[in-house]
Length: 124
Image 1 (cartoon, rainbow, N blue to C red):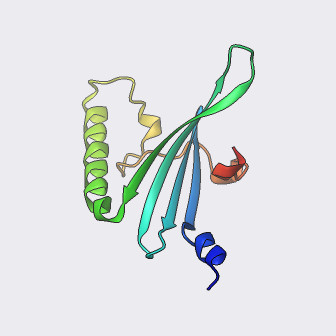
Image 2: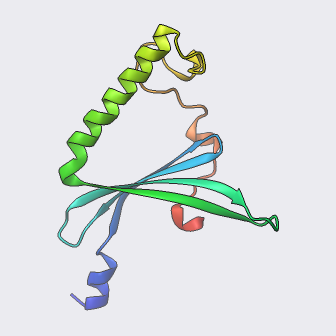
């Protein structure tokens, strides 16, 4: 295989999902290394404005490697469970019950993915 072709496949994108949430967009990208190991990048993107009025996107990126998938999932689920319990306790009125499905600990999507234009991270 030519070296250029090999370099092209180095970070193959396997799956990509963008989620618009208010003023933020989250990108979930599953990629593959040269050794065929999978990893996940989670990117938060927020539109910001300079003093001169021109906009830019502020991005924060988290890399999650295969050896951490299970522990990350466990911690994420525990955090969602804690939020659900706090919501039910009424102690935190800012946790709007309409943002959560009563039969699930996962937040309800604000809108269908069909309501938005499909963007890739490179478009930003």
